[in-house]
Image (cartoon, rainbow, N blue to C red; front, side, top):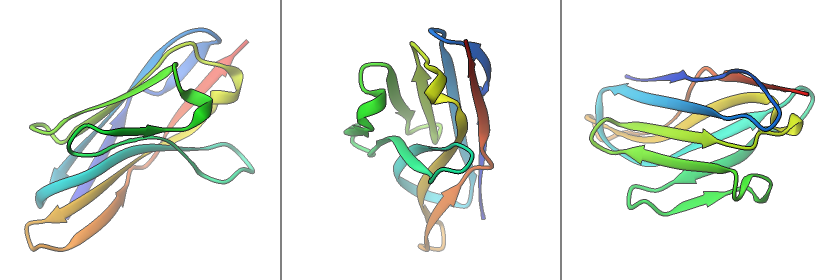
Length: 120
C-alpha cells in the first residue's frame, strides 16, 4: 500500500514560520495532486494549498502571500512553507496525495496529521 509521513508541525509565535513536509512511500506508480488541508476543533476540514504534477498551484485566500506549497516529484514529497503565521492558522494539518499504485489502482491517501499551534 501507500504511506504518508508528515513532519514539521509545532508551536510557534505569531509572525513566525514553520515548514511542513510529507513524504509518500510504498507501491507508487505515480502521483497526481498533492495538497495540505487543515482542521481546527469544531470546524470543517479545509483546503490550504495544492499542487499538481506540473507545478500549478491552488491555495486558500486566507493563506495567499504567506504560505507556499512545493513538491519534489523525484522524492514523492510535498512541502508547505508557512510564513507570517497568525493565531487563526492554528489547526491540525493533513497531507493529501492522489496516488496511482503499481497495480494501477487510484487512491486518495491522507496523512495522520500534524499539529500547528500559533501563540500570541
